[in-house]
Length: 424
Image 1: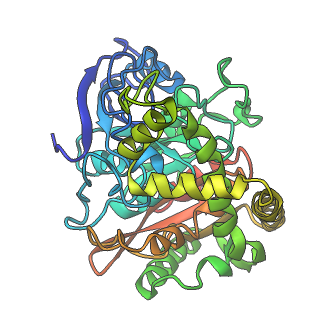
Image 2: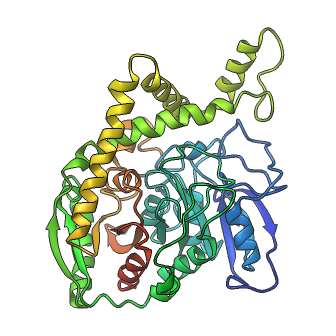
């Protein structure tokens, strides 16, 4: 096994029979596995072993899958390249010497390298779709509430969803079939109102005849030329199969990245307050007073990107700034939601390049966090709008993978699966 793909190699056998029998699954290392350490890619949780399984882990085990390891990730899900991991970066099997994307880079790399048939990641602002695009695999970010987050170590509760990665659309959809559905342990889960339309995997029939695709002009602006050309080639393939396309506008998306980072960092500063080195996690020692021990634990336990986001989030929520930043970001979120709803009234799905760039070379973006944040421009609006999206391989430019992203209405996963499967 590739040692940079997994933080912990482990074999967790599933049931003898079930829809995933004989399949291997890599699980992102922020999803709890009983008796197998779950580090979140951080020194803070380097030795943490959860006493329970996440709901999604229970479900894949009951479905007969074998878990083969805990996949590398950006620390606490904060990053676009898997280079902020305390355990070192993951190389991209589809483009050696380049990043696999993030934060679920290990999950996508495991599938791309053939180390696992399927993988679970989590997507707060593109963390499943980005690595899927960079590694040339399929990744689904489900509708908010479709998949239980019980057992996911929280980064930004109102934005994140667990979702599947696979080499094929049908494979990803089959894993979604297993993990989706309400959970008594997660009050935000909801029943899929379209459940009577068959399984997600059955929708991978490649039939896009009559499908209307809206193309948001704003999500093509600023993308690399080769990425845009590859995207249009994929759209041409869909048009040859009977799909129709037209331009739509999402004027609010120019503010989506700012709104996303204010909301995500604010929620992160609150969620990560529990890591104090007392009950679990990296200890700050017991010399001196509690405040010193607390700050010592966090200074040593968290990496630079996590500290940056905690500080920015704490600032955005501090007295006098809450209305100026956090409330404004929530207003922008409502605007993004309205724009998507309006665009999806005149199209079955929306399509854009998943990432405006091809995979960075390893080490290239670490000195410029802003470059990393702006790379999320096409993915974060979907999380703000609580909608489902899929990233599928669109082809290559200069030998590097390019992904196409389809976005659908809430619980419109079957449409996305149909559109993506038409490209295979």
